[in-house]
Picture (tube, one colour):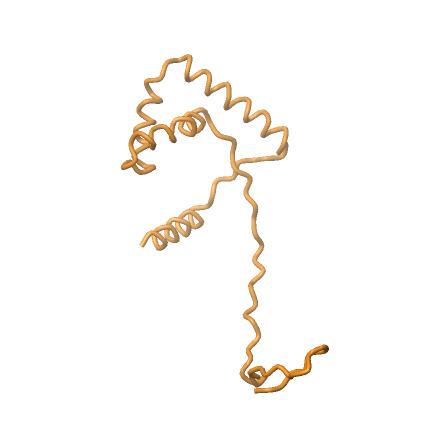
Length: 127
């Protein structure tokens, strides 16, 4: 222990002192270039799914997201043209706003090795 005097205090403060030889510098965080990916504008089905998902989950709490997507996909195929046109129009509006916001945007699909790495990471975190 070592005494440390603090201005304004009469009694010294006793603290544990760690020898410098035992202190290791903090590991350096690699400064990888983080590539920001602009998310694609949603299509009509994605907007439909987003609107309907919460209601389906509330009525069927046992269903997981995959099952909900399958069920909503079936419903989407048999929706009336009026409903489908509504979501198609909304998707078109989203895309127009998106292109105004990101005029130089070009869709670049992930390379195969990036998809595999991402899938592997997801599988490891699931266990």
